[in-house]
Length: 102
Ligand SMILES: [Zn+2]
Image (tube, rainbow, N blue to C red; front, top):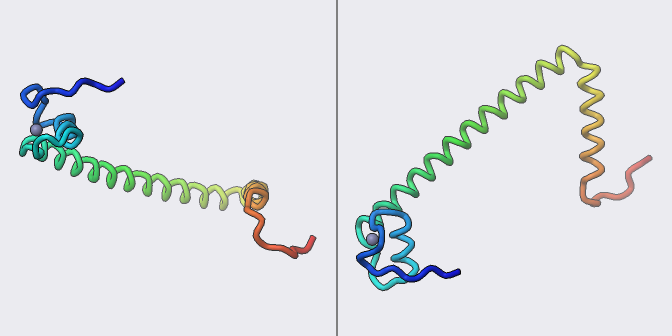
């Protein structure tokens, strides 16, 4: 359901909603307060994204170190599990190459 259009003096300037209002209705250039809110939001979003990516990379590295240590402690079981998982990967590969033996 479309929301009724707010009048200029009803708009929450200095917020992302205010910025969207300017962009949506385009009746007036984005005011400085709303432009600043948008810049702040974009900057924070980019910073949070970098933070999330760094955290994810650290988690992945920890996971890989753990796998390596587990493989050293239990090489036979690890290899069995790896082979099982690799079979699953090969079954899900798109049909690309032909003429495999077997
Ligand atoms: Zn504004």
